[in-house]
Length: 122
Figure 1: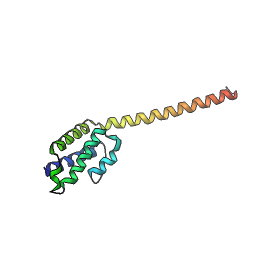
Figure 2: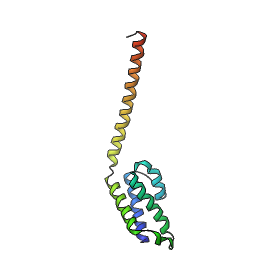
Figure 3: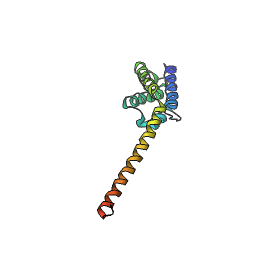
């Protein structure tokens, strides 16, 4: 059981690095950096995996880890991370930035036009 949880944590850490580009010295640090980029259910599963990884380090406390729940948390996390498309996330981020800039320009133009109309220049 100890090796399986350590292997699961290593696999999850690798997926977090490749899919979300989140690096850190431990799984806990990676989860903290990922923050809201992960759904609530996945964050909950990752919190359990972090806790399990800490418990597994001590042989007496390792018995407290529920292997079925650890497997389910691992399966859910890997399933979500495999659906993440880094290219699509970058494209979406660029589109969002462009849309916010366009909105700011549009609102500024409308305010300038309104001021010009009120002052009688147009």
